[in-house]
Amino acid sequence: MPPRPSSRPEAGRASRVPALLLLLGAALSAADWLRPLSGTHSLVVAGALSLLVLPWAAVVLRDERLPATQPALIDRGPRMFESLRGRMVFHGSLLLLLLGFIAAKWLLLLHASGDGAEFTGTSRSYTLAILLVYAIGLFGRGVRGGRFIALAADHPARLMALSFGMTGLLGALLLSLPISALRMSGVSLVDNLFMAFSAVCVTGLSVTAVSHTYSPFGQAVLCVLMQLGGLGIMVLSASVLVLARRRMRVRSSAVLAQMVDVASLAGLRRTIASIVLYTLAIEAVGAAVLYVQLLQHDRDTLAGVDSVAWVAVFHAIAAFCNAGLSNLHDGLLPFKGDAGVAATLAVLIVLGGLGFPVLQELIGAGFDKLRRRRLRAFSLHTRVSLRTSALLLAVMAIAYLALEWNASMHGYDLKQRITAAIFQSVSCRSGGLNLVEIGAMTQPMLVLTCAAMMIGASPGSTGGGIKTTTFAVLFAGLRAELSGRSPRLLDRAIPLLLIRKAMAVAFLSIAIVSGMLFLILLLEPHEPLALGFEVVSAFSTTGLSTGITPELSVAGKLLITVSMFIGRIGPLTLALAVSLPAQQRAVELPAERMMIG
Image (cartoon, rainbow, N blue to C red; front, side, top):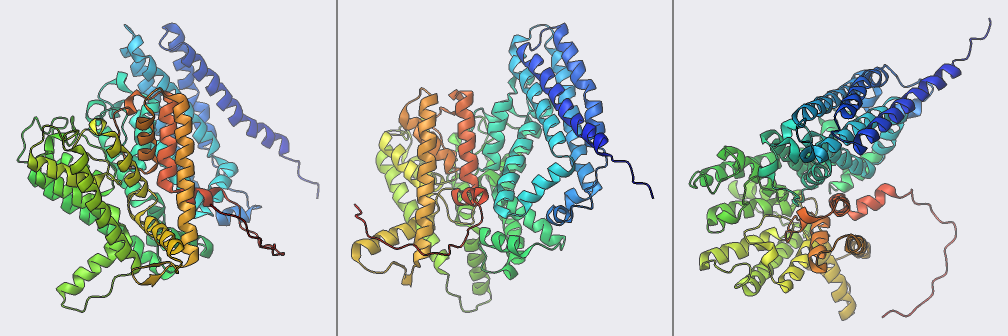
């Protein structure tokens, strides 16, 4: 039987087509970037970019099943990308997004025909967004895209980082659509990228006022991003797999079980279901309570939105997810005298910051009490989280009253001062909402707030920071070294491995914050304390700001965006995502003493 002719030349030519399309798209985008809204030139470039959609769609939507000669890739890749249906849904969504940006580009050209200076930044943002969608579609097709996804899916830490990154990027593209903005001239891709990552990383830093910039659709996008960030995209991915009854590799399941803080694989399904159920239930109750309270305020206080129900839902999600965003013109400052609204939001922030393991034990204890059963003893994790959180709340509330009485609380009456102090003590560690002007706070209080933000919330929560339990373990280790005793907390011994892990988290966090602060000091002319406050707030995903966020340069905004991203996924998760598997050493090295201190 004669040999079949080789198809390698055809395959080589086919593989060059995506590169040529991407190169052509980049060239057209560069031409439009250099001369935006320049009459006939812009129309020709926009027409060429529009025509390029046809060959792009033909290449991207083409059926490219994974070859049978690569069973390892098929076994490792997610099921969505193993099937033609999943890939068609993914690339079909990209096509719709691309068509939306093309339409927005033409609308902008027609709208800015008279005076284009105001829309120059918007035009460049749409051009860059079109190029990004082109690149994502061409990169995500075929075997190479499947191999990349499979490599990430095989390691939950990498999948978590990739999920947050891709969700933030997708959110930025959605916020850049004309339907998301109140004014087309107010759209900036860098600002939208910042806001999307601020929402999905549940930070709350804002380069622009949400109510002044985004339409109800854009605010809904931010709300969804906050919800995804609060639940954790990694947990959502696992919940889809569990609900679909799909098998997970044992190694991936074990790492995932450790990341969501369960003791065994058997508890993984129960923990995921509890996370989703508790989150939605608490947010629903919080939104209902806020709705009743907000009905008592006039329209001037609720300036920014037309629906009181939407204000309640947005703030309930933002508070529980510790996101710190507000869709009101003046934020929460008009509510400094409303103890009911402040208390409701404070409770939501506390519940979101305690962590799901603690909530599960507290709810279980509540059910036991209702059934008149004997209360089970809380675990060490729950007791340490509750006591550390309570101690930090008390210390920060007293500090706010003492240091801010005649500073940021100047002009407040006694009730407003007490309300603001208690609320800020709750919000300063990860909540991000504020009842006082942060820029008017004294420098000692700013430094103390930085320390509280670095400690952050509890593990398994919607908050950031090094976590309350890490701080408690570090304190136990320091006390043990000073007293010469073995480390202990609440009559329980602390393993040395736990102290080493806490030291690693603290060291990596301080190193990352120091590096980011060094870089932003090189880029920005603002006061060092204000910049340091900004970096710590971003890394700890708190969201408080002295007011310099909108004044940052493009480079400064991107640096803060990276800080939010690293702070959300966690320094240890980041190290685990980029690290290689540990190798056992065949030879033990000799130990030697050295001087310390």
